[in-house]
Length: 170
Image (tube, rainbow, N blue to C red; front, side, top):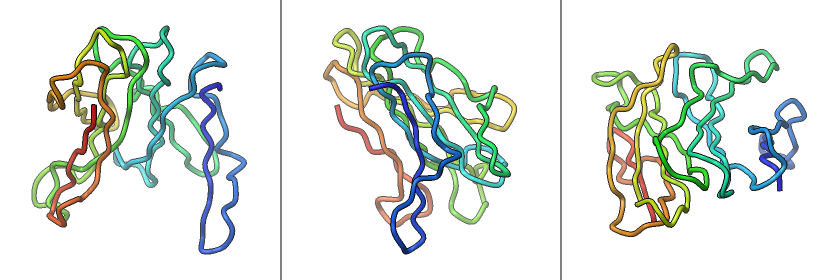
């Protein structure tokens, strides 16, 4: 399957496709993509985050897209390789690990959470990146497991605290 990203609308009625959010995130027709959403910068809506699927030709390339005013566009400053080496894509999510939920510390926006793809030559490394609307910068790095083959990542408030947590699996 190609890296076809689509959005679906659910407003309490039937699930309906959003025709203006249907695109190929990468220049290939193989291996799919992983996608998530998060408010990673100061724009009005959450952004779409993508990482390539587990193809043996893909590096850990993360891209961001915005949907503002019914127009989908790539975010040029949210287009980066999360790790210097490794194949088989990446996994991507978003989590506001810095905020207390009331703006007392942190920037109040989600960080981009990236796990290495299922490459047998790399570990289960996870990196968190901050996007300030103009540039991307790495904030944290963890090793999620002693095993190889990358890491799957997710973000959310799993302990009902003030900040989100990062959840990983090898």
